[in-house]
Image (cartoon, rainbow, N blue to C red; front, side):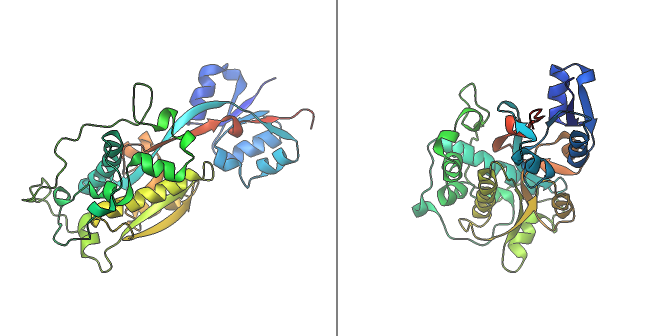
Length: 305
């Protein structure tokens, strides 16, 4: 009898529950528990993340021929940059830099180092940032994507929306910086804001965490490039004014580092309702949709093994 193991409260569970009778579905609270359930025969199919397969007991069993992998894709998950929700100005900066990259591709704005300015002083709030620098110094969304992925992969969901894709270019209106520095944030006590700190601290860098995704590995390098784009926007072209820290996909330390302000943003986080509403985090517009429950994540017991 078919018995499918999935982690509870995930999109895997939602998909399986929608497409299979409830008596076919078994749930676990962690990947480790799912592996145990597969090994002890509680289930004969498992739906999970591709990255969790690597360097796990399941991968060894697949290589030995005891399990086989499916070849279908089922769900897609949006990756975004995550920030704390106690600094709205910083969250807006992170989000609108991403929107600018998408806007740039949609409007044929490309990397142009002749327009990439050196860092200037005196920027005290988001309204004074020149967001176009993120494109001129680092490239638009399509350029960054094609730098990290094979061009043929820049298709389907991860393209500018033409009625079928997921990357949507929002009309931005006037994108020039406010010369007079008019901003809604001038009247609040923001001495501890990220923008104020990175402009004030010695070395002038901001700390960007990156989730290291095993598959597709290109998504990790895309996240690193997004961190550099943020630096370019913050420091008028200086994409190296950054400290990058990497975290494992299942590493709770990444969220802890963001919460305790060890890092200022976390690239590669999966957009999560609970994290946004209850967890104290804010999420940028998604910049990549990855296959979360793919055929390669679907381990089926090989009866011939």
